[in-house]
Length: 401
Ligand SMILES: [Zn+2]
Image 1 (cartoon, rainbow, N blue to C red):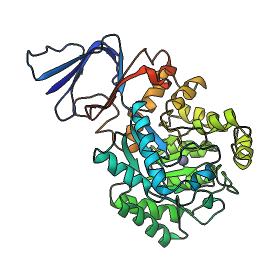
Image 2: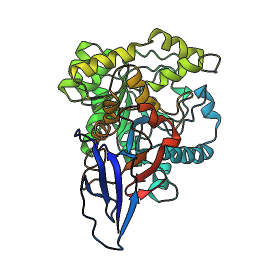
Image 3: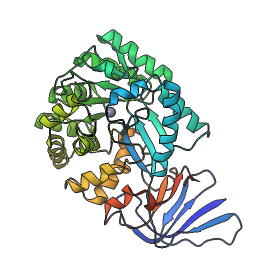
């Protein structure tokens, strides 16, 4: 059985111009068979034609940085008071919302007590609809201030050998990639975002273990030295990258390291603030760093760094399913055109996650991960932030909305 989506304007994410009045053909395996402007439909009852004339088709969106078991509570500490089994059910519901919003893949950058692996498995088993989940298990961190704020989320390690073991544990549980705290964090009380944490050797231990299994490392890194350590140790992505200096940006370019800035965090903290219950210890640090991450990303883009979209969904007021806000911020801040913003959440995001042969663009042989939307998001990116505009979502060729 072939499924034919007919008549839409298609943005395939490869960089070529949109195709007007085009066809997307999905085969019985859920893969893309054809994308283009003319297709002679064979006269067969083995074809299901869906007329989407006047609508817009784009590749399924990819969020490179979420936390599926955080719920967006104003004070993240209160997440700890929700019992794990309940958190898993809540995460299941929120992953469904994420998929309905057009995100067919998410990369989960750290979870509590391995809830991530259960939710990923439940989706793979077909028990619930949700995006493809790539996940890291627990976050690897040195002994430092504030980690207890996220009970069960960190695997504390100190020294080369302990980092090796901590990495192996996550890989054994089924991690798709590893996440390390290369610097302090804004969200951890007492954490100093600019301060480097593990030594170069400790980060290398984690990269070596990931490498053995063909996997990679994502480094949470705000401070310039931590970013440089991470890149020199061989990580694939820098999460946040707030205080990257010229040398750090240079290193990202040279080593083809991706930057995942996560602007949505700050956006919501500033929007809701103290009155909204966002903790003072977070806001104080955010105030000092105000606007810096936007300017750093601007410089990184100018230097040729590949920026992949990530929201840090799950942080205060940053709800799952609202992920497209990040695209709107990128455009609103003048960092990207709508087309570039969409590419950061499709083609570039797939490259950052290492899944570019499976998804990220609409090309023959890849999964049919795509959305049909009302309006043209290349003209107005905010279209993607409104649920009612996401008319249809296909994940691996299956209609899930
Ligand atoms: Zn995060």
